Length: 295
Image 1 (tube, rainbow, N blue to C red):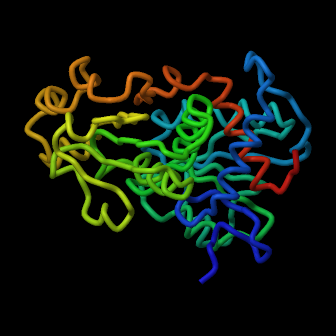
Image 2: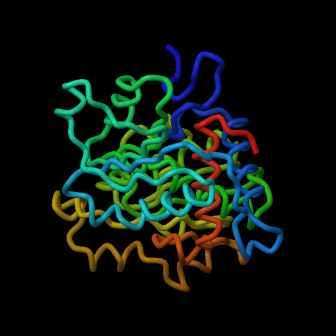
């Protein structure tokens, strides 16, 4: 079965998930990201690669406020690429049923329903490209690519790295996307640390070692990715309380001491870890890549 993100020639035409993408494609996106940054990373390169292209954001009505920061990153990236930003529209499934799909070349989609980006990619013609900005608890490939960029910038390459994801792995789109990207990029070891109630089944099949003890899980780690405790985990009583969770799985100096001295920590706030300009560059790379615009 053909990967729905790829066209018949094997080129990336949608970014729905990091799962199933080749190492070559992930590396080319990261290489393109670097090209959009100036040598000092003090600014992003403006380029007319998407001149004349229309970019639209579709968001579930209940997620408009939450999605605004993510959408703004795409808006800035579109403007740097000289694309026409069409703004935000509420996702309306009835319009698709009536054959009235979005009139745009690139559609940035944020939805609380897992699988919608894959479904939409099958409904639209080949001239429209879908970028998944988060679907339910399933995938968030942009966040994963931001993390991969930060790791490569700090560590230069992925070989021999031990990368640890800490927190709510079960409900995290970011965690799923990072796991697929990390294993494809051939890191030495991927670990997941959290309570049993927040560690999904099947981690071993994905090449991930699971730990419930922070000291064991962080031992000799090169990179730590801290995950949010989602509202879903609290609502489903997966943890006794947020305070208890932080007590057991928050990153203290004592716990951090088990990692390597030069361990990179990627937090839950992108701006605190990856420069805003680097974030714009990743968004620019993805948009130009799916649209088939060469750099």
